[in-house]
View 1 (cartoon, rainbow over the protein chains, first blue to last red):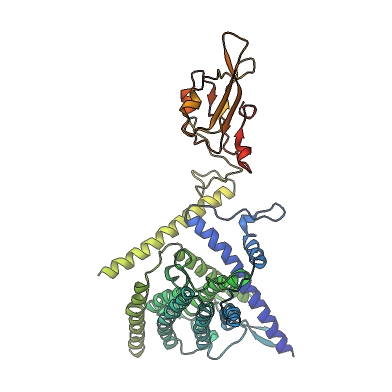
View 2 (view 1 turned 135 degrees about the vertical axis):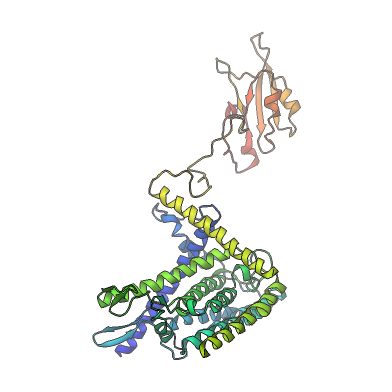
Length: 357
Length: 155
């Protein structure tokens, strides 16, 4: 009973965190793109005359989307057309369940991992859910009964499957270095130091894998350098026939994928909730000093560290989105198959050789 | 080798946008705290609250210059009507009791929906009776009739 309650609370907290961060990310996207381009960005949405740097803009957008007409074309397959955005949304939303926000905390003798579900094959679970997100895209293109939407969906399917391989291959290196598929254990393995001072983070042990993973996961989020499935600026994409809240769900899924990608980058390559040199008792500096901290402060620091890293990667992905122009489709395919895939294999080979030596 | 230069350029591009972000945020931060910096964080002018300084030569809404007694200087010579490329000025002349002036405009209407703000009327006027120096750029109308500015609105 109490266990079920704890899980329920964790689900609610994780989803709230996720959705609030998604809303915030739409604001960050507007503002960061503006700052990068020497502009100011949306700052007019106000509540009671308070503008707060346009922080109300996401809510204004949400209200607008709620009240827009939800139009289903008569020629489309109604059931599948409605199902597609929900599929897309669902598979991204469940991914957050496997992400460890912090270490195990003990309250009243009960061990509570700060993670919704400590799945034994967490890495595979995340990969599977990211792959299943293809169905939302393909289905929306298919159910629209619009041949341009269908082409968009097919482009999306081809792109996601191509980059899925590079994604999986780059993660093989991680599994070789940290022999576990459980995300919480992968984070635990990143705790100790290399040569006594360098944290054993994934980016230190797998620099090439990190680059491959970063590019592949950015392709997976379908944002600008890789936004061929959608192509909002000129080509017709897979959710052309959607409007209102369903369109909003596709849009939200995009932002949620950015957050999931940031969570994965943090968990796998930047030590998750680990703070450099912070153990369960407190800081153990490589130059010999120790700084003992109470248990609750350590937990708070770890959760804060996770959030800061996720925020950094969200920032980085938005920055990259506003830097690069879109790939041409053949360039996209060549880059995925002729560069990322071999690089992933090379990464596995190098890791294996170094591990054996 | 071509791919390596491409990779270098990709990283350079990212650093350029990152530099813009950091530098602009630096200025935004100090401006937010009320510190005068050498430039603001963005080139944006927040239009309705802040207005750009217009050049003295800027051509905006027309103005009929008045004599000391409050009547327009215009003598209804029709030069502006003749020179106007958009044919948007309509003048109706009437006889002035003062023999020095001879004529004055009984009606002087500018159709702003047609005006192209070339300023030829200002240059053509021998009496310096029409100028475009009000600095007023906000004269919208809900229909065409609202944009027919009669003499009273131009003085």
